[in-house]
Length: 158
Image (tube, rainbow, N blue to C red; front, side, top):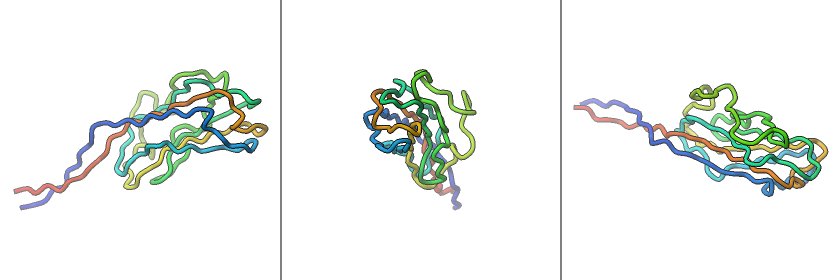
């Protein structure tokens, strides 16, 4: 008898969460706030695709500009690995944002690597220097991630 190692992939899974302006409570002018999604990527997850949707542009409270970074913490952490300084403020438009550098293509590089550790998905909201996030009166952003889990099994061969 011999043993062989085989890898299998789970059925695709989806994480989707919407973050509203009312959840942003940073009260210091120019201070960013990071929100960690309630569901993260488990160990051995392979990200197939991810995107953000600006449902309502962020606005109000005198805030003049605002950007978001979307990435992950945990294994191979990269807090802006998916989106860096993405404009989500009034005038930026609503709808799905292009996936930087990979529109229509499978992910490559660190964003798609299999990590042995679980990863938390993070979104950092960053207003202009003269205003606080808590002053926003409108805005919502949805984060969506499709992934599979790689599993390895030892097979006993005759």
